View (cartoon, rainbow over the protein chains, first blue to last red):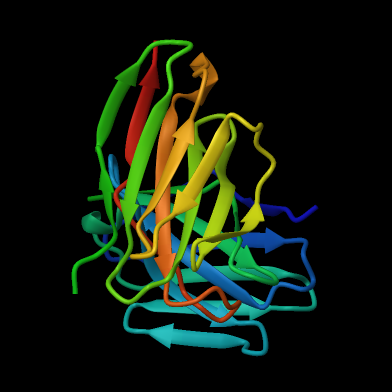
Length: 110
Length: 114
């Protein structure tokens, strides 16, 4: 079945760049998403990329997709304390079902 | 536009009881999906509804069921609650059920089963 994997934890200093990585197994994945979850909250859509793209930039966020290696990354430039949260990578093949990774907890230190 | 709303936000039930959770999608959205989030299993897909029809179902027992109304609002029901059903239940809506559609999530309903 489909599987999405992420590292569990990342710690960065305020002002540095953060890079969160994700690998997926479903070669039929057409869209890949990044969601953010703050404590006690639902999932906030950050950005997404279509599988025929290599890169997408949206303000401080840059998504890189290596379709050959089934590797997705999210770079957050100038990371702030407000970016501390859990970040989920998700893939979508056919239909509307999302397969989520385990989530990466980002901790931003002063 | 108002976002996805879920009620209630918190629930405490005891084993053996049943529970109904409600989700109101973003205005104009016709597809509603449900996910369960637990520390052990992470985020898992429960089911998806579009135009009052279940289109897709995850790997959950028959105790988990859902429905969608003509105004696109959706409810999910869990019967004979077990301790392991304690979780955050998230609802997501999208305009249609196509692969290109982006899903927007509500704040979730946190269910605690004692």
